[in-house]
Structure formats: structure tokens, C-alpha cells
Length: 411
Image 1 (cartoon, rainbow, N blue to C red):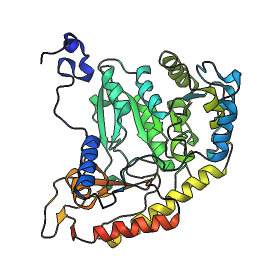
Image 2: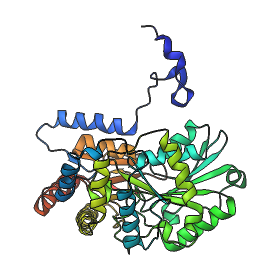
Image 3: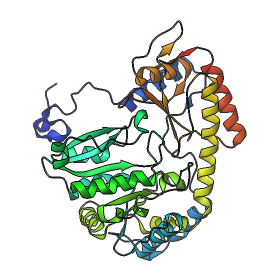
Image 4: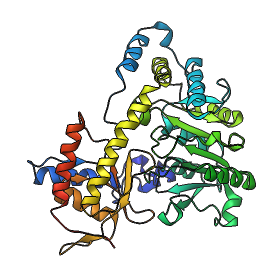
């Protein structure tokens, strides 16, 4: 079958004339295929899914009630463009109460249609061909992908256990720093679960000033902080002079799928984001913004969400340790990032986290996500569906039974 005439027209950023012809399989597609195989091979065995990275609960009822009311108001029917005052003021109030951060709602806050879109748009504000974005790995790749789209490059900063899962900013080559415009960080970190310290953020501020770099801190999991009090990058002196923080209502407010978040920080940086955004979307539906504003004003939602996922993580850590894994409670997020087994006594060896993950899915019907960017690790998410604590305990019990059927090896 011959190629369509437009095969030669695809942009190089997505593969050029070879687009659609590659044989490489994306990590999550491999997981999906393995899940289908496990379901086909063991139809009577329930698939235990620790791979899902999204909240299992609906948004709180009162938030949905606000939404129901707002969708029927004619004043909410139009384009929201760069957002409504109600949402921006709710954000400013939340940042003040939760982190002690003072923001001008009119100039230092703008909404985004989920934090993913903000991370996709921010490189457009700074990256020209030949520029560099510094990014921690493992992590969320969107800002790096869009850096490449604009002709830039990504310099990866591995998050290693020996560095306490912080990037090594001291040993970045001088020639890399000269071309760097952005430093993208993410704390509490997904997937490692590491939380930032004030000292680390102070170092980031100094690094940015010394090297003329803008900081983008992805704070999507900040509400889910278990180790100490939640810490905003912008609460550190000088931070607002060098960057922005990107927040989301998905993780901490059970508003997965609503696509609402915000960018806050230096007013000129927020304005640059707003100008790019103006050419990408026409704003999130105003009824969603108003429901989100109501959620931000409720102190109980983030408390309840945090309590649930912290409880589930503690159960998971205890269970995995009983099975021979070497786990510790993460400082934040609803992810557990743990060293991958290297094999099974008397059975196969695993050269990577991906091989271990595939074995768990196909042989034990236990789904995890592998990370091999900075060592071989598995990510367990506690966003599995469970109606109550009894259901959580039953799921832990069944997982433990399956894991204890073999003796796991760890190098």
C-alpha cells in the first residue's frame, strides 16, 4: 500500500516522513497490552491495578452542586479567555492560607486548562532554536517535549537516591548552563515522592539568579504532602523574582478530568504565559472555574484527600516490606517509588524495571509502572478503586498473597 501524498509533509518534531512507521512501543502501551494478556490468560483472576495515576474518587458533592448551578446561568456561556476574577481571587486566597504566599490576583495568577497545558505552553515563552531546558528525570516529560518542538534541547538531571532525589545543580557543565533558559522541577516529586526543603528551594533561587534561568515548579501534588507542612516554592525569598509555580486541582481536590489549574508567580512571566495562552485556547468553561473557586475555599477537601492517600500508602509500604521489598513512605504524592526486584529465586532475572513490571502483570495480574531513567524502579499508585477501608485491606491481602508465591531477589 503506497504512502499518502502527505506522508512527506509531517513535521520533523513528530518524525517527519517516517511518522507512523516506527516500531517502538510506548511504555504505557506495553502495559496495556500486558494487561489485556493477563485478563485473557487468567479470566478468573482479578487484575490489581497500581498503575493508574489518577484519583479514584469523584469531585466532592458540593463542588458538583456548584457546577450544576453554574452551567444553567447564561452569563457563563461565553469564552473565558484569560480567566475570571472569581477564580483568580480564590487562588490568591488559597495560596495565602495554605502557604503564606501573597499574590496579586489580577497580575500574578492565571488559570490553565489543567497543569499539562501550562507546562506545554511555558516553553513557547522562552525557547528558541538552540536553547536548553533543564529537567529532572524521571518525571513528567511535557515541558521537554515542547522544548524540542521549538528547536531546543533537554538536559536531563537524574534524581538519584544518593542525592536524596534532588537534582545535582552544582555539576551542570558550563556550556549547558550558558544555553539554558528554563529549569523545570517538580515537588512533591512524581514519581519519587520526594518533598522539597526550604534549603533546596533557596539553592534553586540562587542558581537561577546566577545563571539567568527561569524556574518552573510543577506543584501538582503539593496538597498531598505527608512529611512536614506543604511548601510552596514562592514562599522562599526571591522565588517570585525568578519563576512561576504551576498548580492543579486534579490531585488534591479529586477534580481529575475537570482540567483546571493555575500559573502564579512573577507578573511578567504570568503575562508571557497569558499571551501564549491567548493564542492556544479561549479559556476554561466559566462554570468549571466557579466550581473550582468554591473547592479552593473549602479547607476540608485537601485534608480528606491527603488523609485517604496517606493511609493507603502506609498499608502498601507495610505489605510490600513483608513481601521482601525495601520500601519507605514517600514524603508526598500518591505514588510509591521503590527499587525494582532483580529477579526471582530459581526463576527469571530482570534487567530493568520494565521487565519486572511485565512479569508482575502477566504472571501475577499486578499492574505497576516501570521507571528506568535513573536506576530500575517500580511505581505503585494508591489510586486504585476501593469503596472503603475494608476494601483497601482486602486488596492488600490479595496482593500480598500473590507476591509471596515467589521469593524476590534484590541486588
